[in-house]
Length: 430
Image (tube, rainbow, N blue to C red; front, side):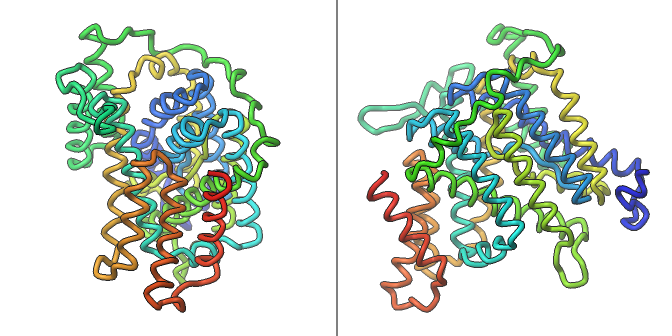
């Protein structure tokens, strides 16, 4: 049955290798079951319900990816997208988390339609590579700012807006320790380095009496507080079009970039250097996003950590199925997830930020019309506390600079239409 489903011999792999690859991938990305509930709790959502929704959305995405697309790519609610959900859409713009879930659901529908009608390639090829890199780096810096805030390392100040917090506080010390441990273990190629760092800080905090231990294993919490609570009707308002687009835009490039990177690493491309069954993989992403929104979590996307499983031999969807099963088993770890404080997940956020800012190396810094919009997009995301604003200003400045510098011909139709839509949105809807 497994041979028929996953074509193990054709991919030169075995059940044992695929299982090991699945466990490896899970350990590298399991931190999301601790981080995501903390992130979405900031939007007023029930932490226990979000924990369940996170595990279920990840499991659904992994199972679809494995059983239908037959790729060793794992899925879960995305980092950056959860921060955008909580701190921008809900925190800054003032929408309820129910409306934000509606926007996530609509972005999933749009992604699904783009995949069916093959518009995805046109969009990806229309956005300049430099701008994509700047947006990725900006989201990373946004996560870094949230991490420093959660750890108490950066605090508000009426005179300077922000300033350094109390570096002698337990949270700040533990966050710094956690980041050093995670980074050092990652450098040593230790599997599950991020999760080890989170758990180490939590255990030390328990022994120091800073955190109360509520147990490790129990029945899963109720999903009722978030299940089917999304408000799709309100998310259809004109003012939320840019929000839906932002969810879609980030997920689109995140998924496409991850799939291409993972496929290259696992030698999964065909003779024409293309990814077979790409449509199925993209539909797995969009389907998991819609399912996650119904259950109560932000956008589900492909994880670059899947490369860890591929590095140890994962080549088929059986790897993703193993990850999905492990996420289902994680449903019984809710007491542990509830014990972990925000300063324990802050190092994970900052570490992910470090990885995301790597995209800046792809920028042509000698061309000021390429470099300036990148810096604008990357810097304004954390400073305005809004991923949407950073994307909008990046697009607008890119097109404006090309036009003013006499390089109008380098702009395609998308780079003329999208900046105009962003200008209209900012002028009339804030």
